[in-house]
Image (tube, rainbow, N blue to C red):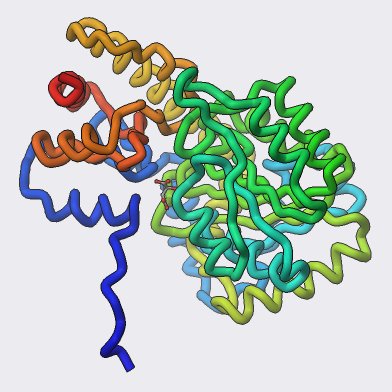
Length: 397
Ligand code: LMR
């Protein structure tokens, strides 16, 4: 049965980590995958997480199956982070949240569910988007197209192109939007632009699927959720995939959530029953550890405020790395202007480096970036930044 199987290409992001791990050069730097490293170059284990884990270990709780939809306290915490604790939508019973295997799992469950509801709908993603968006929706059986998003000349948003394209889409098209910290570009619409985007999506009868994998890495947890709340408050029924991989530094625990905003409480109950079937036939029910830890941080005031502080430190360190990257490239005599890096948000910078320059960075210097030119600024630190700046200066020539 396997004789004719062809070799698949490496994953554009995780495949780079495979290559990086196999690289024996000691000076190598991985700016490929979206992972936050601290100034020592380590993935931090947050104090809030450590404390929650210690409590969990002490409780020596049995590891029975979680419900299909996951841990109730986790789902409540994730939902509140998105919609706010005074949300009328939550009070009206119109929101449902299920625990998923990371943000990727949330997208996949959402995609499978949508395919069941609207088998002929098209899905549109930003140009460019996270490499896995297209793959996930295509695997779920959808035709996936792009809407204009990034303008390489301005290193900013092609707002008119984006809104024009959204207006022209057939009713019922699923539109995937990055609610904050756009991956891969780091370019987000302004608040005023979001108002217009949301109104366009509503007027055109599109189905918004908001992806928020970096809540807390833009301006803060509340501020970064404003786009989700804007869409929800316009009365749209919608899907939201969220992730705690980055904000809790719990990548391997696969802590994500899918939230669906329904038209009524009754609709909510029916939707939940169907989403549970999608989960059951994918992986049955989610794992316990990460979900329990996140739930206890979200629902314990002292741990919550510790986490908010730690998240703020991560956000500020990334900002400072952006500043240093721009300044050091200038100081190094690089003529190309990199000031736009300062305006980008979240972990990534669409650096403008060409695929050939990215290849040279990797081959000649052991500095790994995604072939689109995306670099993970959150992997820069005081030890590797000079090396990276020097390498970029060399490949730019
Ligand atoms: C990324 O974009 O690098 C992250 O979201 C990790 C992944 O799964 O691709």
